[in-house]
Amino acid sequence: MSVSGAIAERYAANFLRRKKYQLIEYNYSTRFGEIDLIFTKGKYIIFVEVKSRDENAIAEPKEFVDSSKQKKIIATSQLYMSTHSVELQPRFDIIEVICSNDEILYAKHLENAFTLD
Image 1 (cartoon, rainbow, N blue to C red):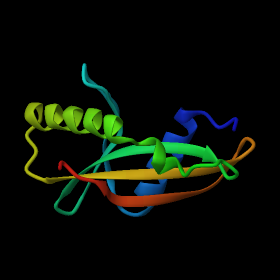
Image 2 (cartoon, rainbow, N blue to C red; image 1 turned 60 degrees about the vertical axis):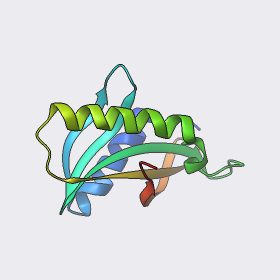
Image 3 (spheres, helix red, strand yellow; image 1 turned 90 degrees about the vertical axis):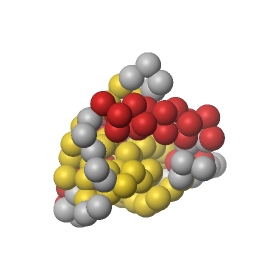
Image 4 (tube, rainbow, N blue to C red; image 1 turned 60 degrees about the horizontal axis):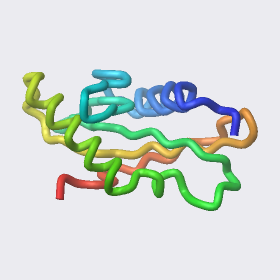
């Protein structure tokens, strides 16, 4: 797969904007880790992990967001919420970007892909 992570993240951001989500942060980094995209919509602040894979990959992109990665995203989101005045309910989504060679075919939005538990 030749599509870079940055290109997949831009594609995912535009995908969510078309669904009327509001972009708040792009590549938010802390000592705990990084969150690719932070959006709001309705009563939610959404922390988004973007994963891209080739259409013929043996595993789905979401499978690469393992429990260790989830813990890093959750810790980073908690720091974000503690340093910004956010009154919204947190939600954790994954955007799977499916590619073929150097072309993006489509994105799949997995809402509430994992929780704080």
